[in-house]
Length: 543
Image 1 (cartoon, rainbow, N blue to C red):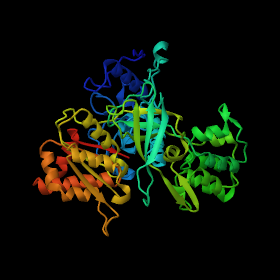
Image 2 (cartoon, rainbow, N blue to C red; image 1 turned 60 degrees about the horizontal axis):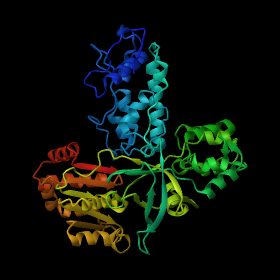
Image 3 (cartoon, one colour; image 1 turned 90 degrees about the vertical axis):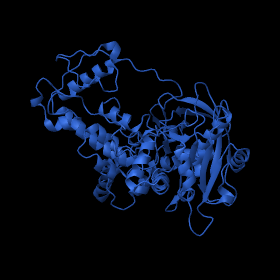
Image 4 (cartoon, rainbow, N blue to C red; image 1 turned 30 degrees about the vertical axis):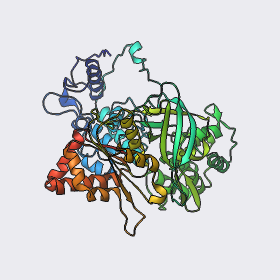
């Protein structure tokens, strides 16, 4: 893209930056506009330059964008306050990245660094796309954007003249490969993987893929769910509105079913309530909109609970809908391989149900797939390509996979893939759940693979079958000498599952094994695991 500007072009983005020449020119123009007359850098706000990441001493070498390299906060196990502390003093784009949930899950349509950079460059205006980060991330990002706007406005912007044809052009998105251009899949079937007596309800769900939907083992499946109709009807009744009220060219009921999120009540809803209410209700709503928790129930207050909490707040349906967040797609690890089930795709999904007070709460997507979708339904879906989560290119490479519960999903896909291509490399799976008798997912499949020699080792851990809880990380330590031997032979290590606890504990077990059986100091063992990650030999699919 050619940028025309009344000031002399200055290369704010260095040649070493990972951009094409056209991208460098565009970015230099953008920052020239944002930072004002670069010819007189002494006239610019030093604080603004630092916030935007432009050096204030010597020749400018380019604004600092967020990257995964040199980002100590790029760890999904870290709490948001810890990440923000690590990012203190950094330019705004890296701090925006630190506010993200660090899962690189792709649910926002980006990875964490790219989402941060897109907000920083003003090419993305939606600030609430980080689903794993939820309201916490949205609040942090909102505050940082205020800081970004202040930093940019403190310097006189130079208007850019962009040719109309280029200014109006948009990239053509491949159908089915992003949330912005979804395709379709047909719901085929579901069956329960747990036996009677299990405390869980986990389902194996199958789809027939429509056109343009191609995937690889390790990819994820994005599904646009629908809210429960009964839940929607309760909300409409509390609003005192007609379900046929026209909103956005559709009925209020239809909009509430598939356009807006009805989970955690957003700050904007409480802000709307504060304009309607008076007295203590107004103050309470304002406090909630600021992120405070005056009654200790903010974490469990969803949209319906918010309406119950403020019975005098009955906004117009259109204002109510506009105050809600968009209903986000959900991502699931794919549990099948296209090499063995061409045109088909399967998922392994926990159905989420829980009680808050006296009300039953339902996971939106899990109960949509587990209860409400029927065979033959056509769903809006997309394939989320994996970010650094794939089988090694050499089929001889040993692989170690740790996937308790539904974390087994991508490893079922890996095993099917390796079997289909007759990969000679050995395979080792760690699987665990609550009870062996009721929660051994894909037991017949896995034991058959083990009997045939395709699954070289199967290590199991059951947390409720003994007095003392026993997890996959405990099993890893128990077989530490053999696991270390596999790593020395070049094995790739994979983990899938809960980011905050399980994945963190598994990494801790890896450090312990490297120290105990690799003869390393604690610091060297930590560095060894970090090097495995850098080399692509330690990969995680966490949520």
